[in-house]
Length: 311
Ligand SMILES: Nc1ncnc2c1ncn2[C@@H]1O[C@H](COP(=O)(O)OP(=O)(O)OP(=O)(O)O)[C@@H](O)[C@H]1O
Ligand SMILES: [Mg+2]
Image (cartoon, rainbow, N blue to C red; front, side):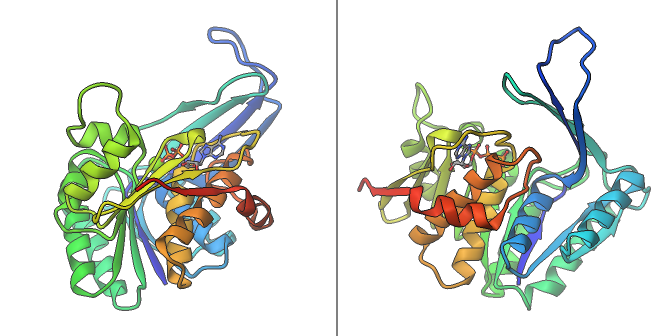
């Protein structure tokens, strides 16, 4: 089982338009309401791809109950901390015009209590015994301490469970001190987390900074231009994704995290897992809703991923 932990799920509205004009009345021709947020996207992708996932997160209010029903309907196993004050889980919107780039409207998650944090930590502690891997993904709501992922990463290390962290800033810095097996931020997130050499941030420098800070492996993504993978002994590879006509690439990184851990749990090497997860990420970009993939598309895209050793 792969345990997915994150603090910011969302009820997601995805609206499609012919075109979109700020300041004008824009009428959607299609609306979908789904469960999303990084931890939801990742756990659902692992499930859809045939893995055994367990999602652990906070939910509250009517949007939270909607997310739980969606997880039930999609067969994504979950253990939920229903927040003490039942504050509603955030609602986010994605606006997709046929003729232009995607716009995201993001609400911040509402605060959680100390009791809520302790309850989530307890769920993780109980399920670590059964887990093959732990995925710590996304930002936290106010009320969760910056060392939360670090504490969970430490508990996982002590239980002999592999850890993947997809986060940024203080939570990622703290988690790096626990020597996680793999970290998977995008390049912008690395630049916001660690001091990179002056000038344009580049993925090669980002990988080196992450492994120097404690990661065994670092997998740094840069959207459609692909990603850079490196380990703490200086190995470096570039991973070129398939060229696809992207509809909505939001959630590709979340799906990449899930694909990586799923592939590793099936016995693949990190290099093969990086290739597989890159096909998964591209499959996400082909669907309008974030964190939604079709397994047959992953299979079709797999031969179009190119891994190149750089050092
Ligand atoms: N347009 C695209 N075409 C093909 N592959 C893509 C495209 N966009 C993203 N990807 C794949 O997905 C990976 C992750 O994308 P990205 O760097 O956007 O992640 P991210 O910023 O973490 O995304 P999110 O946090 O929204 O999930 C990339 O390394 C690439 O392999
Ligand atoms: Mg991401």
